[in-house]
Length: 194
Image (cartoon, rainbow, N blue to C red):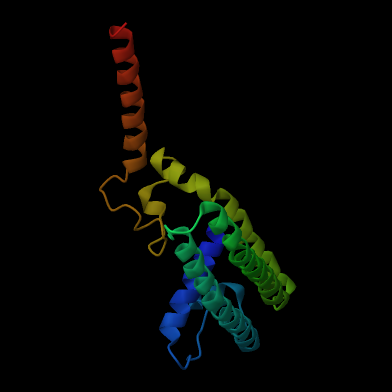
């Protein structure tokens, strides 16, 4: 199962748990995002509706998916059943899981496109900045570790701001140095042992 699907399923479970039996109106758009994109009330209502419908559909599929997981786990742990019979019995629930995963992926794509269709051209241009930032995301931690970016540049509300509260935030640098030192020590021991 892909990481994206796992995150999706976990998010749906969290929303379902938080909503309880009678789901309240949920605002999925952070105030900062609303302000940044200059979303109007109609857009916010439409986007929240689309996302709410998406999670409602996911929750429905999630129940079926979890039932299939239970069925698969039960078959896999059946010590009395022949492995060949287990394999054959796993075909239908596994195919049903794959069908649900594909439906979820298609629903995600449809919802993303529907939400994006609510944006005006100026808002689409602003979202392009998010795409560009996402491409740089893997390099940000490395830039901090290499002192290319200063600790003072971390936004206070950044997920990176609280990632490591050590005084110098050098965990990744130290880890790399430690790994290099271990590698060198192993190499030296191999030379001595010859």
